[in-house]
Structures are given as structure tokens and as C-alpha cells.
Length: 177
Length: 283
Figure 1 (tube, rainbow over the protein chains, first blue to last red):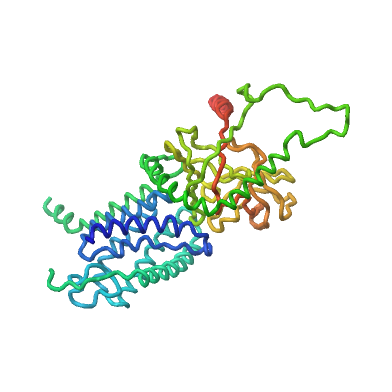
Figure 2 (cartoon, rainbow over the protein chains, first blue to last red):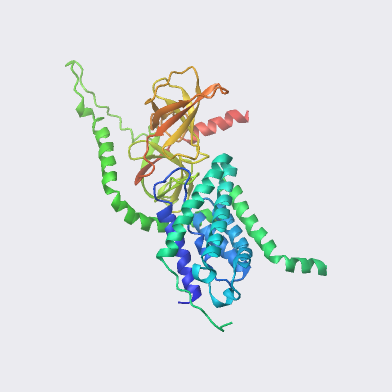
């Protein structure tokens, strides 16, 4: 399957899962609002241009916003992590040539610890920024900090489960550059 | 000039980032309930259709609960029938009113229209309910919405051709005039964005005696709801020493997590008082 088709399917699936599963389940606790849809951005190919990434981030966030009727809220957080993603990847990639040998970030291509750090940092930034924007409209700053910490923990758990359940096949591409 | 182009080229990614961020912020902070933007009507049609498909499946799993609540609503209506009452006094006869209320237009004030709930959330700080009934079926913004058991659930905020978006009571900007059934004190029902089962009733004077379990109903002061619709039951009181009024925590009467059907209330006599008010204010 080509990368384009795969990403289109992923886009639709993540939005549908977020809207019809995660937003529908009865709240575990008032501090926990799990999100996984932004995994789409974290899984984009290494080689994609930065502007394309940001545009896709905006499109993803806006698609979710259309369902939750909070126009601009998720879009802003997704654009932020799409912008920060390349910096983090440059920092965290350990092996020489990972970017050319593998297609997209995963446990196999980056190694467990760097990949997990990458996930944690971006998840935390996404949640904090999202809840911060919500808190700006509503107030309650202590509540917002607690909420971002707990929601990040639960979201990370879900993301790890997804990584384990749906192992992505990563081809090792030699001399394909 | 060359330097400017150079600058733009070097920092183009960052400028593009700022542009997208600015666009998101513009949408986020300019979108409120009186500011209907072009994209929201189009987006409602699309998301409404997708939600309808999903609801076809989800509805099946809630049939039992929906049926129970409809039976309960029916029971209340049956108990209001005239034939259920027998006058002990034989002198009194039941005189059936011959004036048909519907034939005289001015007498009807509220008209109820049923609508299917296709999308609903309780987890966000601002929750919206999407109904499968829109402008083509006679829905306008600012109409009240109640659930099958006569409990208030929100106000219509935006409509597209076939779908309408309702601002749930579980919304930071939600604002409903309500009163205590026993003592008649009026206050405002708001939500703090935390627990979807608890609403807050503020502006209740401290002289009022409140006990837990008291019923809170709509006041009838707003033109969206007739008076006497259920809002919730008093849970406890937050006694803030710095304020001259109570904030009462109330348990919402509507079960927001299980909404399948709703009634939209259209106020037929809405225009006249508004025009009068405008005339008085204009003087």
C-alpha cells in the first residue's frame, strides 16, 4: 500500500475512533480526557516537508473540531506539535541514516527509549496546550495542570497499547536513497 | 528589499506556522454563539450525516433505556387525562371546553417538535448536542430543547438545512433562568465544566431555606422555556462567606449520557414581547 493511501485511511480512522469511541465513553474521572487522534501526526513519514506536516496537522485538528464544534481548538494544538516534531526527531534519532533507512517513526526505527521520549514529550505538549486554551476560556488553572498530567498518562497508555496491538511493518530500505 | 525576501525565505516555515496558529486562534476566539461563521453550517451538514450513521448503530444498544423513559413520559401524560378524575359532588358536571385551542392562533404559546439526537458529548468543557432536524423543518436559533421526560437539556445555537446544534446545559456559556419549586426564588443555572451530573444554581439569597432534594424548575422568565420544566434536584449548598448569595449544587434531572430523543420548544408568541421591549427602550 502506498504511503499516501495508508495515511488517508489513518486520518479517517483516527478521527472516527476519537469522535465515536473516545469522546463517547463515559468519563473515567473528571480529570481524564484521553486523546489519540494526534498519533496520525506522530506517525507521518520522516521525509515529509515541514509545511505539509503543519497543513496536515491543521486539517486533522479542524476535522475533529467540526465534530466537537470547538473550531480552532484542536487545530491549534495539532499545528503546534506538527511544527515541533522535526526538531524533536533531529534531537532523538540516534543511528546514522535512520531517516533514509526507515519510513516513519516507530519503536523499530528509532529504538524504544527515543521513540517513547518522542511520544511522551509531544503528547504532553499537545494536552497541555489544548487544556490551556480551554482554561483560557473557562478559568481554573490548577485544575488545568492536573488535567493535562493525568490525561497525558492515560493517553500514553492507550498509545502504547495501540503500538503493541497494531504493530506497523517497517521495511528496512537499503540503498534506496 | 533583497534582505526582506531572504528573511522570508529563511523563516518561511516559522511564518507559515504563525499563520496557521493565527488562523486557529481567530476561529477559536471569534466563534461564539452569536457569531455564526460560514464553515459551521456546511460542517454541520457533513458531521451530522456521519453522526446519523453512527447513531443508527448506537441507538440499537440503548433501545431498552429509551423505551423505559418513553413509558415513564407516557405514564405522566396518562395521569393528566380528564377521564381519570371523578368529581365526588354530583352537582358538578365536567364541562368540556368547546373552544378549540388550536383554532385560535394567539392562544397557543409553545409548540413542541420532536427531534432525534444524533450526536452528544459530556466529556468536553463545552458540550454540544446535534439533532436531526433543521431550518427546513422549522428550527431557529434560540429555541429551548428538553428531553423525553420534560427535563431541560439546552438551547438551539445553530441550524443548517437538516441538522441543528444545541448548546447543552453542560456548556461554560450556558445560562438558564430557574427557580426553586418550594420557595419560588429565582437564580441562574450554570455549569463549571467538571462533573456532567452536577449543575450549579447561583444567585439564591441566603435567607431562603433550602434542603437537599428540593426540585429546581424553569422560571418562565426566558422566552425559550415555559415555566415549570424540570432542571434538577438540590444536592448540597456551597456557602461562600464572601458572597451574599448561595451557590447550590444540583443534580441534573436529564440524563445527559443517554439522550436519544428530544423535543424542541418553539415559542409562537416570541416576537410580540420583544417588539414591545424594543419600542419601550427606543423611547
